[in-house]
Image 1 (cartoon, rainbow, N blue to C red):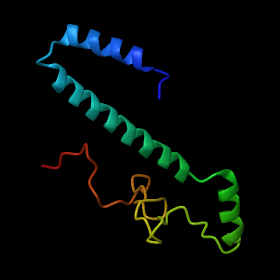
Image 2: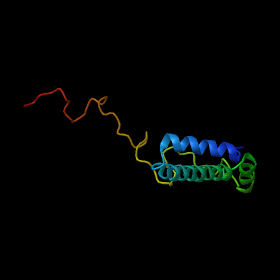
Image 3: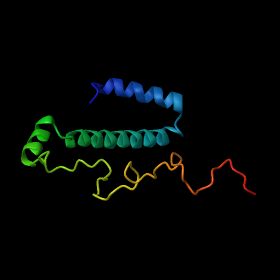
Image 4: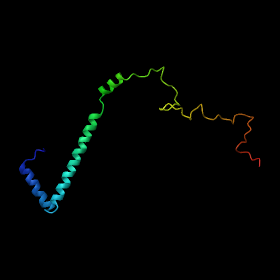
Length: 114
């Protein structure tokens, strides 16, 4: 797998036995095995994710198969959201400025008729 032969593996095991000790060596080996298994599953999942990404060729095929909407039929109203419902905020629905009218019946903010 990594180009490690039997003599190298035995040397690694003897060093691990000396450093870790005979009591903790099985627990460390189990944890190492679980960690390597989890790493392998994660890398396999990552590889599958990259395989599922569409290539430019796939995107081109999809664009050719889908018929795009001609510009004359497309909605040009910027105040319609993606669901087709009209958005209430916009220039057409904003209140008009009434302060420029001289005959306004609404009292100004600064007046104190009290």
